[in-house]
Image (cartoon, rainbow, N blue to C red; front, side, top):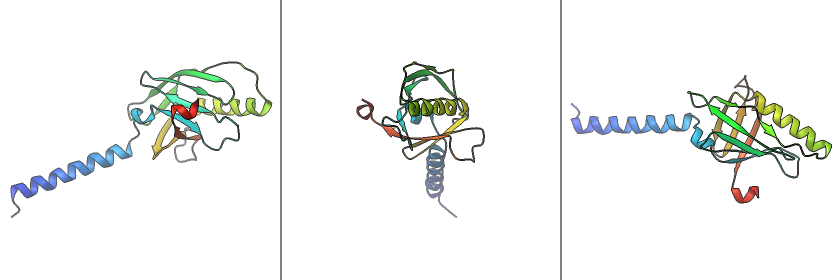
Length: 143
C-alpha cells in the first residue's frame, strides 16, 4: 500500500503538469498584449499591430496608422475587432494595395493562437492557413 505522502506527492505533480499543459494550450489576451510585425510583407515598413490592456488595438498598415478596439471571447481564442479607423495619407499604389489587403484580413479575423513568439490571426476555418502571422517586436524596433 502506498503511503499517503507518496499519493499526495504524485497528485501534486499531476495537478502541476495539468496546469502547465493547459496554460500552454490556451491563448491568452495577456500574451496578445504586445507589439507584433506582419511576416512575409514585401513593404519597406511592414504592417504592425499592437494590443494593450485597455482592449485598444493600433498600429501601422505600412502606409497609414489605424486604431480601434478588440474583444477576446470567453474561450480565450476568439478575437474580434471594432470598426477600425484609418488615417488617409496617400502612398504608392503597391502600399495602398497591401494596406487594403491587410485591413480586409483584419475584418475576417475570428480567432488567434500564439506559438512561441508568433501570433496567428485566423478566420472562420481555423484549420486553414492563418490569415496573417506576426512576430513580436520591441517598441524600439517600431520607432
